[in-house]
Length: 190
Image (cartoon, rainbow, N blue to C red; front, side, top):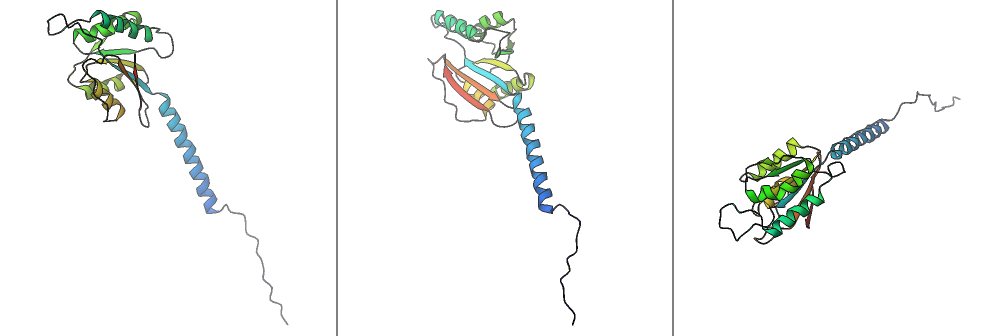
């Protein structure tokens, strides 16, 4: 009588396919996470404000700042004055209007920066230019009541930016735009 034995053969250990796929997935995930960390480390911060209060007692098409506007411009300069500290402003963009240039002038003088005059009629182009020319830096943009919401919308990708009223001068937007991912938006008053 013959015995029927089940014979077990020893096979060399081979890594199962699922274990290889899992290791590849984990490796790819770590590489993507590292790329995301590297990409967001160089975020560009853009501060967008409306020009300070204009002098309405002067009947000219391009009025200067009122005393309250000069005080607000000085406050803006005090907020971002230290060129050597973290968070200093690297560039300033203004429209050709006198009130915009006067709003940025105290800060520009203290930082030793020459303001870049950009046309007020292309807010999207200004946003792209600021991000392209100052990637990873900090930029101040001084706009108008009708251009500030459009600049912020172009920077943040958020189309629901509220309009700025005629008497609203103290609204400041801080938009942080990472290389990868979505922009962060902060609205405050100064």
